[in-house]
Image (tube, rainbow, N blue to C red; front, top):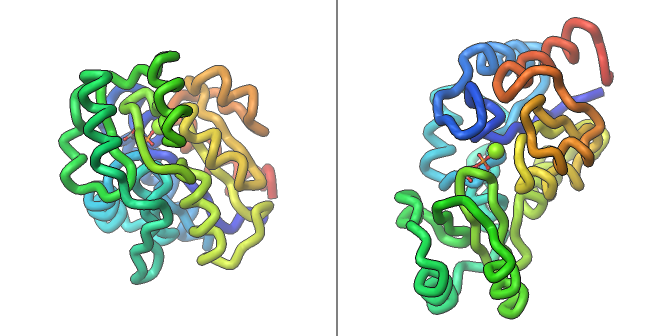
Length: 227
Ligand SMILES: O=C(O)COP(=O)(O)O
Ligand SMILES: [Mg+2]
């Protein structure tokens, strides 16, 4: 029985990948799930203030994981679950790869975002040599001190909920969601997700992004699928 749904934001709750408009039918479906007693949490690379505002105004109740896994909020608790960023390493990354800082970086403690959201071999080698986490959501390249990634924050949030992993479903669109998938019982890729994420999913939805979220929740609530 699914008791907790973890949903990614960008590319999953939005109308499509690469856009920022939230799909209103996805939000209505989330409302239905919460009214049926299922808790719903946001898990995203966005900063804590951005996600906390969205969480409050969307009326979500399952908590949130911000900074691509490094900051967890549930109940009244805000927890940092990664090491704080080494500013010299961050500056070296910034100078070496000449990427643009996300405007949200001034509000972050541990994981930092840059654009364009393109990983390359040189970046991966640099990160490997320094024991640093680097990954891309398709919206931003994320850099943090290891251990990091959505799986770190999701493990803590599931522990705070006191539920079993087989009682948790995760929905996503990009490779940063793969780390979240490893921590849950039901791995759900939206129809327009990265191919590699689909290969690691238990369910690949027909519909894209937010319409896929509505598809999944309708199946869960109306057809009793996966329960
Ligand atoms: O990379 C980001 O900041 C946002 O991406 P996500 O919501 O898909 O994790
Ligand atoms: Mg995403």
